Length: 143
Image (cartoon, rainbow, N blue to C red):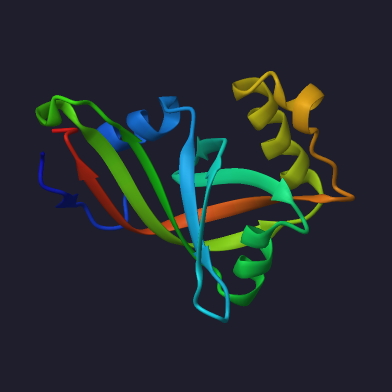
């Protein structure tokens, strides 16, 4: 299995391409109690930041209101461990609850995931967009 490589707070071109094209990320959050919560999310990369949406009453949102730090992992597993690849991104989050930025990111999420509007429509009345600004980026198998 490839050893993780630290690449500061910036996404390299290879890491950015991997994050952009992967369909599912797993996001880990912790609230005040310190209990980890990990769930899959449909994400988007734009301007060096990662975005995903959630219902405004979701556990991850409640955790981020208490503790704005999150970790995202994107990976491709293989039984041939020499081909395993992935990225772990740690960062500070910002909740976007409404307004032009909410609508802009929602439109981009809808373009990347065409099933979103019909299956899990995002409304400013009951959803938030989470913006993750990377502070530490680790990757493996992408060199």
